[in-house]
Amino acid sequence: FICACSRQNSKRNISITVTFWGEQNRRFFMERIKTAFERENPEINVILNHIPGNMYDQKIKTWIASGNVPDVMHVNADTYSYLMTKDSLAAIDDIGNLDNSDFIPQFRDIFEKAGKTYGMTYFFNYFCLYYNKDLFDKKGIAYPGLNTGWDDIAKIAQALTVRDEKGILVSSGLTGGIFDTLVYEYGGDFFDKNYTKSLFNTEPVKKALLWNKKLVENGSIPAAKDYESLSSLDYFQMNKAAMMLGGTWSITDLSFKAKDFNWDIAAVPTISGKRTVQLWVNGFVIPAKSLNKKAAFKFIAYLCSEKAQKTMVKLQIGIPSRLSLWDFYITQNTVPENKSLVKDSLPFFRPRHMFAQFNEAQKIMNDYTKLYFEGRMTLDDTCKKVESEINKILH
Image (cartoon, rainbow, N blue to C red):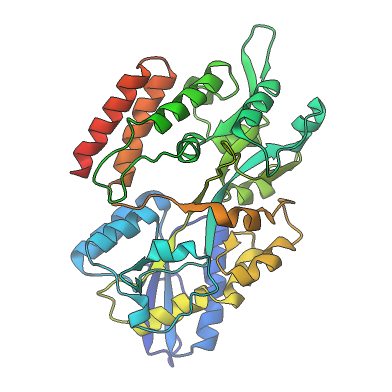
């Protein structure tokens, strides 16, 4: 492992290695936490190992296979699921007592198995609707609110779509990953409860595809060819989209880069009053083969503490996982203005799917729905093909 720390203090007789990924602000935060933790725990030396995100998952799988593991690992949902299937993680509550009553209740669905907790985190992200206030004001359109439905959004998106004199799309009304949310709000899902069967060839999925394609065809949502090499966030930052459905992880980028226009966030729109807010959580875990589990537990407990999470909020890294800190987060003088949306969204949080083959399944869905939106496959053929291909990897 790469040591990113200063010379080890002679009094420190235990060393733990902590692996993580993230941008520069995340690295700065982890360095701050390391310094504060070592000050309060003079017997423990923390070695931080930052790894680029595109290499991270494979590194973890290599370590697990070799048995040469770090003591604390930052993992995403897919890697967490993979490690759980391999029985590669230690139960945190078998090592120490970490009261999780102050954390959002959905964490138990994510990190608990058979009454044991296998992961914790200091932050999370959820889906919301970003909107460009200046573009709304220019057209005299009211901002989206808690009671805004997807049919309302479709009308607003069409009104805010701009084409030049030749009919070429200049800016769209809406961008982002709306398809999954539509499926959930139509009452559907992509997989059965035990991840043994695809549910893609079902009516809720078909309704969501039809709704999405209609907006692609009228230009309210950019087609794949319009994106070129741009992401949804790029589109929104460049004033090429009036609204974007996406995760709160984009708040940090927007707060530093989108300074030439006013923006805010609103609740995920509804279908017939039903709202589903996708919840994305990455966790910190302790490998079962760690030789320093007690010290690793102390570090995770400190990382998830009130003190550490306040530091994280001040650095504008994310939303604190402790409910008791939400008022602190909301009252910070930072964008977005509507940070209290997190409280309105809590009852509707739905953790993203977590199983080892999720990335493969997601790629299958993306590849074939792209063909459908481009008019190269029919609705029925798309749904049948996706369901068939996903069932192959689930069995």
